[in-house]
Length: 277
Image 1 (cartoon, rainbow, N blue to C red):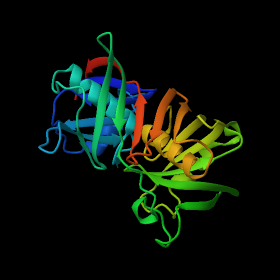
Image 2 (cartoon, rainbow, N blue to C red):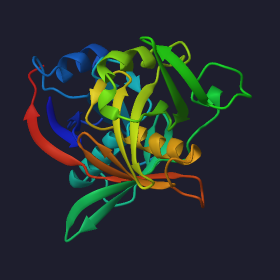
Image 3 (spheres, rainbow, N blue to C red):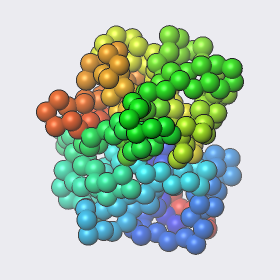
């Protein structure tokens, strides 16, 4: 299997060259190929497929074998890959995902793709749509106690579930300890991605993430979108902000005009290779 390795702010993925790549046990295959010691090493395996609903379909199999509805860092990588490989010849494209149709736009300067801006659609804030347990009449904020610590957060869906927690000192949070406990808490019937956020100012936040199915990663695109939505809802940020992640920065805008969230950031091809199946 020939493949390319991509990263968006350190959030890394393996993309097979063949469209509609087939494997009987795709979950087991993803676990093996994503293993950083015995495989190629990545946060996930990306499957690109043909579809009559968009320019292509994107699927993400996490490093633990589970499938995610959507990934903001991956869609930037996938869009650039499809353009540079000649499979899509336009700079604005539509991508089918389990979270719906997303629309990345390539930003080209001096003949080079410098960034990709993705229309991520409207955030979902109702409990049953995130999903979060509780009455539909309740707002999507909650207090959760794990490891004898109380965390207050805002639930947001960007096509996948997020719980955004604002903290005074990010360095004081043991993400490896509390992250998996929060991810699998009973309040999240489909589990959740957990964002821990420290406010720098109204236009800048520092965020670290525990990703559902992947653990601590260097960046999370949908999580960055959820962070700015939560920040605006709680009055901690404006509707436009820079999200500083372990792997770099994403620029997020929650539009007042149409309610859509726009994510802008880079995508980099790391290397190409051939895997001996």
